[in-house]
Image (cartoon, rainbow, N blue to C red; front, top):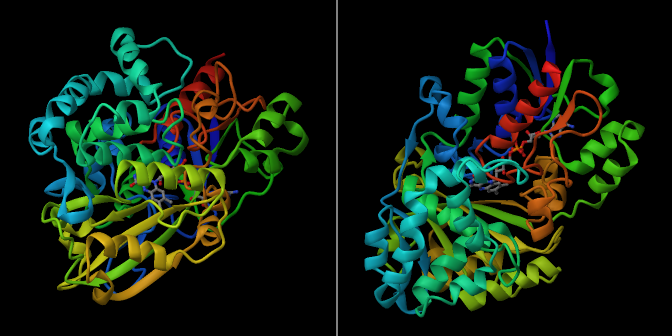
Length: 470
Ligand SMILES: Cc1cc2nc3c(=O)[nH]c(=O)nc-3n(C[C@H](O)[C@H](O)[C@H](O)COP(=O)(O)OP(=O)(O)OC[C@H]3O[C@@H](n4cnc5c(N)ncnc54)[C@H](O)[C@@H]3O)c2cc1C
């Protein structure tokens, strides 16, 4: 019987394992940590009974993923839950840009920019399922929906600044800039609007849901699905060299640098050079809080929002993102805040709630960012500080120690610059192939990149199956 080993049990590793097992291959997953899930784990980080997401929190791309949605993960305990408001972007003076599921409702809240929002996101939302089929895969391929994809591509190639300047109000511009800033990239550079366009359109098409019980439920459901296909999972074992593995297919849910260190001389010099040149991006400085009574946002809609993009106006966020990308710690960093408990009250204890936050900081930054992060939230929610009854900090070094794929604390496993969006992790017709026969890379460093969608794992497994078929 053909066998496969998958190194790493993140959503991409587990998806690759499932896709291979579905093809009748005997699969073993080897995971360094004691629990499965990689970036989809949850734990009681602050107070007993309070469930925090260690990493991923909101899953528009999880619901939209053609592969994950084909797996019937509800049978393995996965339930999505939606907050009332998908995204809040607080501004001074109690104002905010608000993203609702409905494009019309969102547009209605954006005043004179409403029509422009509708024109930008109405068609994208309608075409979203077609775009996803092409966007969530290798860049070099024959598009399934060429016309739709070309229309999307013309916008996605643009700098976020250009598209953002279509809007006149702080609310619309900020809302758009905040979503684009998920890419940890300079908003004035080409392609910096791609992630934001997709994430905002996904918010309209599917919302930004959380997994009931914590993101761990996604990992547990994927593991359950794999085990139902007779796959085996071994935790608490770190793979250090490819020589310790023997299988027809080896699937690596790891960073390009880890492939280099595991493969040694087995990599062709050309591919080794590409992996060594792979650039890592800014880092995340994560702080989880236990908050009595929730965050007292001045803006009422922000109190009902699952995700908040905290950093002020578009201009302020663009400046902070530019600094952190270029290696300078901004005085006022861009901060993401998650109020998952609004959609999933089972994560709270009485009126004490788990709040998930992280700031964008320069790659490998080793300073303390707790105060600047709290100050950013205080700016739009005075009194927040007094409500904190517990906190847990994971700085970039701790992030990297938590998961080897977060090199230097880069939670995207690679900078999302224009070159690396195309050459992921190297330029080639089959970006998953490492050139070592039967060995593939399937982590977020391969197409389509970061996020919990499992599509890198799925496409890498397709590449392996094509190779096996000869
Ligand atoms: C703070 C934070 C917030 C995020 N928020 C979101 C969000 O809201 N929504 C979203 O969609 N995405 C989010 N993400 C990103 C998302 O979690 C990742 O993009 C996704 O998990 C990548 O999946 P992966 O399978 O490629 O790798 P990972 O999930 O990183 O998994 C890799 C696994 O491989 C294991 N491993 C590595 N090296 C070895 C080795 N040598 N031997 C054995 N095992 C090894 C690691 O321990 C890990 O378990 C967030 C990430 C972080 C950190």
